[in-house]
Each structure stands twice: as C-alpha cells, then as structure tokens.
Image (tube, rainbow, N blue to C red):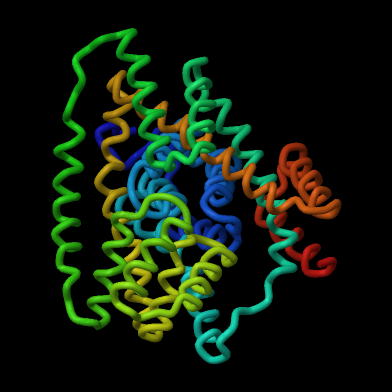
Length: 390
C-alpha cells in the first residue's frame, strides 16, 4: 500500500468501486432514521462490522474529527469514509448519496405542505421506529467503546463528559474539555514540546470559506438564500435544536421569509425523515423558492462540511503520529461516545413509553447482538409494527 497518500486508510487495500460506494450510501440515506447518533451507529454496523471497509479505530478517529468541526456530524462521517476509500471522488459520492434520498423526500413533503398546509401523519411509524433506533445506538456504543476506551483515564474522561453534558455544558465545550484533559494526562507523562503545525493548514481553508460567507449581503434572491445557508452550515455545531435557533434568527428575525409555524414544521420534517437533519434547509428552500430554492439551500448548508472534511481529513494520520495530538483525539473520541450515550438515554426516556415499545427495544437489541440482523430491516419491521398497533 502507498502510505504517502493521505486519503487512503489502512483498510482500503481492497478497492471499492464508486458504484458500490454510491449504492451503500443511498441505502443508508434512505433507511437511517433517528438523528445523528443513530446514523453513526448504522454506519459503524455497515462499514466496520459487515463490510470491514474501515477499522473501528479509524472510524472513531473520523467520528471525533466530525464532532469537532461545524456541520452535520453524521454526514461528515459519511464524507470521511467515502474519502478514505476513493479519495476526492469517494468524498463527493459518499456525501452526496447519503444526502440525496432525504433531500428528495423532503422536497416532495414540502410540495405537499405548500399545497395543503399540513404535514403527513407519521406518528404510528415513528412510535415503532424510535425504540429500535435506541437498540441500534446501544449496540454501536458497546462495540465502539471497547476500542475507544483504552485506559482508565479515558473512561474517567467519558464519565466526566456525561456529567458536564447533564449540567448543560454545550457539546462542543464537552469535547474541548475531554480533549484538553486527555492532552494534559499525556503531557504529564511525556512532556515533549507541543507541535503547532495543525493550525496553518486548517486556517487557509477556513479563511477562504470565511471570505465566501462574508459575501452574504446580496439582495433577496437564490444567491442570497445560498449564502445564508452557507453561513449557517459553516458555523452550526450540535443538534437540530441548535440549528433551529440559527434558522429562526436568519429567516424570521432578519430576512422575514418564514413564519414561526413554517419554521417549526420545517424542523419537524428534518427530524422524522431519514438521513441528515440538515435537510430542514431543503424544506425551507422549497417554501421560499420552489425546486431551485430547495436545490440551492441544500447545496449551501452541506457545502461547508465537504470543504472542512477535505481540509482536515489528510491531517488525521499526522495527528496519530504525534503522542500529544493523538491524545487530544482520544479524549474527543471518549467525549463523543459520552454524548452518544446521553442522547440514547434522552431518546429512550421519550421513546419507551409502554410495554409494546419496551418489547420492541428488547427484541431489537437481541436481534442486533445475537443474530446481527441488518439495521435497515430492523427499522422497516419496527415501523410496520408501529403503523399497525399505534
């Protein structure tokens, strides 16, 4: 293997065709319900355990990197994996094919909404799907934590991250504290001089991206819509609820393009459709500018993720060669898994509400761990149960 190429992982010796890469991500984009934590769990199942395209350690590194940069973390993990298999072409194919199914679904729902003024009724399907999603997240947490929590220090850092999140510390703050704590523990052991080569490489891309964002003073048009979503995609960390705050400021308070009801409905569509929650932008774009608006807004909000992954992807092998930088990444990995555990707990409290949902959770967990059933079939079966019994 040619180790000088930064876009190749140690598991990429068996070449994957772009068609196969596209089909796998299209499938995930169509079946990945439940938000970023569930998406990441399904990717771990698909690419680490089933296909063995990437090792668990490499997957965790990409998860940590995606958690530390703005944008939709699960989509950025998809972009990272595509890049690791086929370089620039894989980066584009993996990311676009994960986004495309949700973008199409949201556009269709937006067209129905614009015509009839209401959302489709999906409560029964979600009732069945949610506990199955919890099982998928729990299975991934168990698998990933065995690789990520390599020392007692990292286990303690993970527990501290859970406590910090419970006390209201923002996800980015939790990750930063976890990374600094792991760095500090390593520094006390080794005490080498810290390296500063990471910042200049990232800074050049950040400057170019910032220059484009600063142009968001254009008149109300498709260009203005694109630049507004480009700005949001470049600065938003966290969940769909964080996205809601940015969207409200931009499109209600500033531009006056939406009503409160339309914005809340847009966020709801992003939550109950599969794939990235950021396809909320697609819904808003359609309401404001039809199909061209949907296309422009989708490209705008996801483009920063592609740029940031392309910028920092080649740095991951270099980070792992530095003991101090590697320890920061280990801490961020522990913090990321802690945040996933918190999400699983929060979703579980809201989703497991009666004996049927508890049964779906239990059976789903057994099917995943004992029989290794494909999570897409699990989601489909749980959705059907919810449809019939809700």
